[in-house]
Image 1: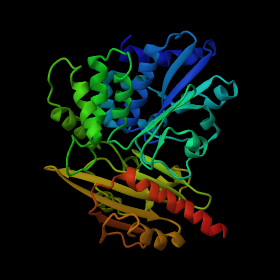
Image 2 (image 1 turned 90 degrees about the vertical axis):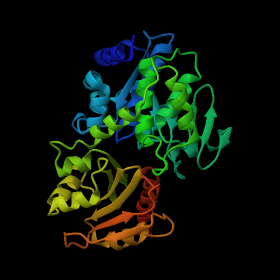
Image 3 (image 1 turned 90 degrees about the horizontal axis):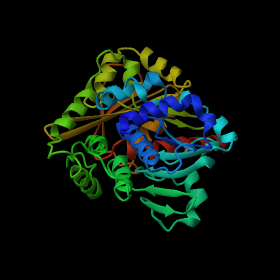
Length: 392
C-alpha cells in the first residue's frame, strides 16, 4: 500500500473504529501548516506499514483544525494533489469517547502538549519547538530524562518516546526516525519529507537563519532515495508560489490561515502568521477599518487581540514585520513595551500606519532570525504573567 492509498484507507476506516482494539492518532499542531501536516500523515503511514497487527491497531493522521481553515492552505493542496481531499480533521473523530473507552493512543508531531486530559493518552512526541518551562511534558517526565537541556530532549522507554530538537523542520526529525528503522524508504516518502524541509528552511537560505546541520544531513540522505538527482529549487519556488497565492482570500482568511491561540484566564490572544510575502503593513493598509480585525477575533472565541507576523524574501534577503491589534486598552501599553524589550530582542522599529487607532501598531523587525516559533513562547509568557498580575 502506497502513501496515497493509505490515506484513502485510513479515511474509510472512520466508520469502523469499533472493530479495532486500539486507535493510534498522529496529530500535528493547530496551525496545520505544511510541516505539521506532512509530519502527521507520513509518520502515521510509516507506523501503519510496520505494524504487525493492522487488524487490531489503526493508525490515523488527524489534522488539528477544521476543514474550512485547512482549505486556506493552498501550498498543502498543491503538494498533496489528489490526496488533499483524503485527510481527516479533528472534528471528524470523537477523541474523548475513544479515551473513555481506553483505546486511544496519541502521538504528537510538531508540538508537545495538549490543553486537555488527552495528554494522558500521549505515548510519543516528535517536535522541533522550544520546550515550555511549565509544560505538562516537563512535569511528568523531567525526572526520567536520559538527556535534557533547554533545547533538546531525548527520552525513551517501553511506554513512551520523546524527541524534541530545535531543527528547521519537524519532518527532519520524522525522517531521521524512519531512516533509522528497518523501513525501506521509497521515492514517494522521500519526496514528501523533502518538501517541508526545504520550505521551512527557506531552501536552506543563510539569511533566514532557520537551517541546522541536521536538516542538511537528513535532506542529503533523502535525496539518495529519489529516482534521480533533482534540483529542489523549483520545488521550493512552487511551494512558495502556492503559499503566496491569496486568490479569493479575504482579510479574515489571511489572518485565519496560520493561527496559534494563546489562552489565559484574563487575556486571550491569537498569533497569526501571514502568507509569505504578504506583509503586516499590506494587511493593515487593506483593512481600512477595524471591522475585519474585530470579526476575526469574534470568530476565534472572541479573542482580545491578534499578534501578526510576516516574512518577505527577495533575492535571498529576508525581511520581517510584526504588528498587533488589541481590543482591551489596559493591555495595549504593556504589550507595546514588552515586545520591544531586550528580553525578546526583536529589534523592532515602529512604522506609521494609515489607521489612526492607538490599539493597532506596526513594526519592522530587524532581527530576522526570530520567526513565530521563537516569538510565541514570549507572548505565551506575557499572557501567563498577565494572569498572575490580575490575581495579586
